[in-house]
Image 1 (cartoon, rainbow, N blue to C red):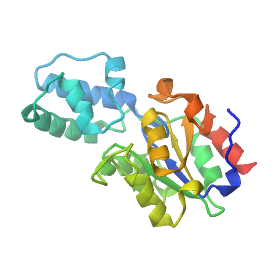
Image 2 (cartoon, rainbow, N blue to C red):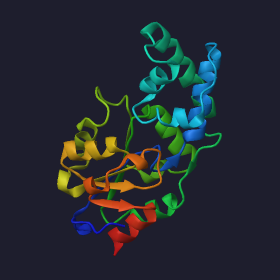
Image 3 (cartoon, rainbow, N blue to C red):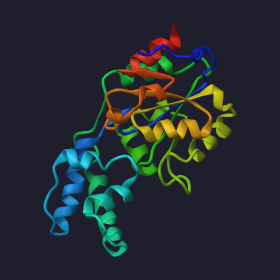
Image 4 (cartoon, one colour):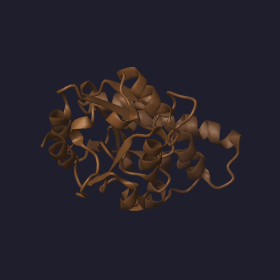
Length: 224
């Protein structure tokens, strides 16, 4: 874990990314993308290829998965099929990453607020959190369709801070991708990267205030 410059005693708001940070959902997403491709008469893609498409919302995922130059007429029915299929299969293989449950319990309380900000559609995000028994851990859950703009736009962080009446310097964004880093910076918040998620290999650790191999490390640092 890299030595942070921020003081954990100042942090009141923890804003977590979902996929790649709290939950390992990549297999269910890959299966749903390939089911969509097969539905439209396309061959399946390697999982690693699909994993590289994840992180910018469902529409962008399907746009990338259907092939370069896919038209709106192709994307709309593809997105509709994907969302229906994923809704039915989003908890087939999805699990929390090791240490997530313990860390959330340790971080809760003492006037700290736990929230989620993801580019996944909000209805799916809440259903997955509830299905995994994590829904009650978070005061707010915002998704990619909660606002007119997705991460890395700061609107999600800014809205969260207004809702909980906190300043940017009292908040930390926790995520696995450069998108999460940009989101935090655009909102003036701190940022903690995790090393295990889908986008973690793209993280520049020099751009992080904190970097952890498990959320239990974050909880230990906050509680020390």
